[in-house]
Image (cartoon, rainbow, N blue to C red; front, side, top):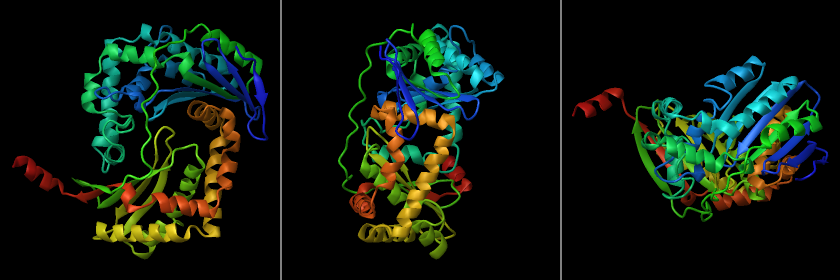
Length: 440
């Protein structure tokens, strides 16, 4: 068992500790306000799922709030909120996280709750809770994906960007068919495989006493046995460039035409990914960006234009372009303008003013995130799980501010090309047309 070792490099003070069962613990004191954040990352996401059983990671996120040996049904929410705290959980391609922000004097409660469901969820997992949360997830899919304009764009573009069989080909929400096919034994096997202390990182940030916090963690998590049998995620590497444009036409009842594209970009954790982030910020983040100025202000062919980075550590990141057309503007007009702006940027790169503005924007967003104890706790988990070292958080901003204009130009020239994108084109159809086709 490692001894706690505190480090501070002029940023967040970090203390690390590891339990005998493999649980990695990352602590950071901040006595500015009497609150504490608990964040628990499990190294499991949709990339760990197999064909025919997609959506299990997300389904299990919901099941984790359905009771354990000592907490029944909705008790986790009731206990945390009754103590003045807030909580939630999320699932991504690469991890599942659970988090609480509590009054500092209620920290022990949050730690006990997380330990109780890590160690004893199977005692409460039955057909009733399984069916209940299966229905909740299916309704979430309907509300966020299937029954909203452009709702399936993320799922479609992901499937186009990553080939069939790739671990990132499907999104965390899963398919309706797979959700229906999941059995109680599938869920139990999933829990035994992934919800283990040696597959998790726990961070606690805020108004805490280090020795007392470690004692509580040892008390509540220390008796939970490690689980063996987890297989590493399948290889997510791909060639840097797709090689040819992949384009799909989607005819749906949407408010206007839309052009959405995903570009294959460098993996998270690399200098090139930071350069790509700056490129997309200059090109498509906010009303001062190049694409907004060209498409919305100058050409008036669009009502919105955005370009952002989906950072992925185990596969190429994706640059997401989203343009909603204006009036009778055609996709061909928007296509031409986008390609002209990308080609100009690839040739000349950002101006000094654009680069400084993009770096300042990313700096502000980063500092806003680190302002809260919850934001810091989440980032400590992220760097520990995805990159192996929570202390990397202290150099993250400096790495972005060190990127040069030439690096930004180079990554744009290499990656923001027509032969390196998957494209969705949305064409509106009227409800009456749909009804006529159904009747026919």
